[in-house]
Image (tube, rainbow, N blue to C red; front, side, top):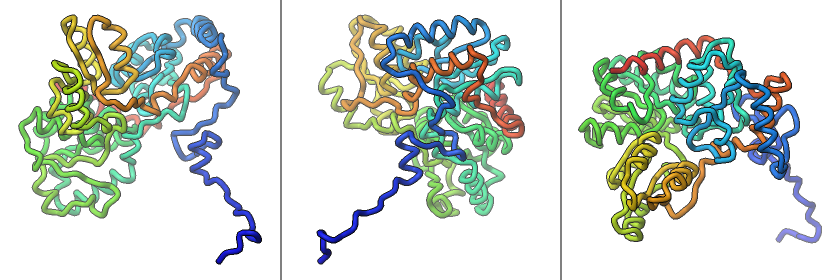
Length: 393
């Protein structure tokens, strides 16, 4: 038996990953550094709102602030425009006079804005730790290996990649380089229709649920037409026969927020609120989408609530910041979060008022911080994929 009276204390040192998660280190090889080159204002500073206003006013037309729908209210109040990721990137491109684009969203969104804006415009992400777990589920190395698997199976020439907007610039570039297109949650069917005119199969990246829901709900395919490629298994966990028989090769990725909703969530809210309309995002699991009354993108959710009659009841399956904002905007309707468990998007919530104030004040003082810049080769192929999307009928 070990003598606990004489045992030496363990020399436990936190790992680099632990320090990174604690916000005490930065990973130079990752997009998700957590340090700012300066001191952040205190979250308790009562003058934060006024400081943000003053810095934004000082910058004037030189700055254009974009706010994604999932951002906190404290940040959204300073956005010049709000919207989903692609709408915001296009809004930025439509403002060439703005020297600085401050993107209150996540990393892949800022990359898209940099791709679509001019070389003279500088895109800033207030907190580099604002990433996207879904986008991170498909790396350039993993996707290149997947293409090798498809090539060895003899099907690569039949495959057209379609990548969701929620993907890194590297994945968008891969898509453009291999003849594919980008899609959003609102035009996924059009993108898939186009892809199947180019080839016999689609590699859908990185969200399996959007790909599956679009193929089955909107295009009449069966679940058997879809296979799931797992980048953490040899050959994606698929046989050559499965790859040859599949129409949709779905990447094993998902949204951590939308993936929380379950069929039990739907059944429970129907029991609790008789007559409720269940409205969910297509990033939700297939069984949730199948059980819902309405399914659509973030913009669709907002417009559906706007058009809904007074007194109607709605349970919404999407990010909580948006649900709360919609509920406040429509006090004449009963709006609830689909799940009993409150769940914000943790990475979207990284952009808070102290980070926004720090970014705006730094720019106002002439200091460019947290610039997101995509290299030229990646940009050219990613832009090609985006342009194919813009050309969709």
